Length: 180
Image (cartoon, rainbow, N blue to C red; front, side, top):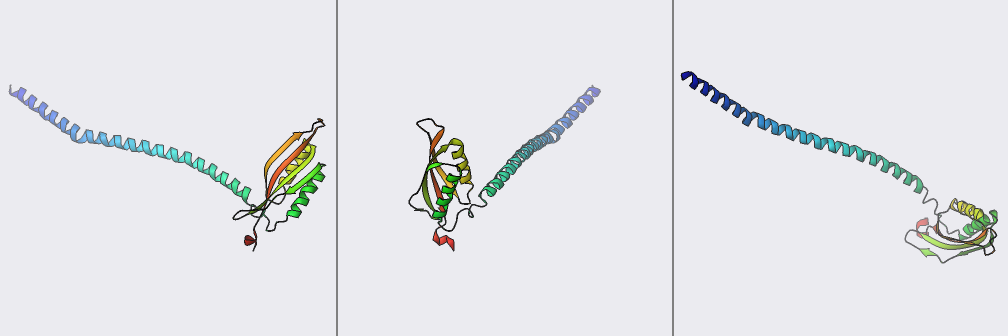
């Protein structure tokens, strides 16, 4: 009986030691391990998200560089003088160069906006589609900033292969206050 009590006491003490170990050592360590794993997962997710954003950022930087190159000569392409006569002459020469017939070039009334002044210009002519296309390509290559607002192409009534072109463009120049 004495031996049994000793065994029971040893078992109770061993059980108490195991319970103390589990309650005060194992469970807190297990909770810390879960917290560390959650933190590690969150950090891994943040790192992968940041690397995806880095790829996007480099694409945005590349796009920004392209836009900067596109608008690099923006101010240079807006002359300080009106030079309407020179522009109209250039357009007439381009039309003649591409053998366009029935040329009409009519400037509209000047429009003044804060930093820019602009003049609408209506153009009409007649020629083949290829001639009109080349004319528009050459017109866009002029040193002056031009915005093509409308292009209307109409087939001839006799189906001769020619089209009537009506184009509305706007040319820009710097107002006198910015010229100095």
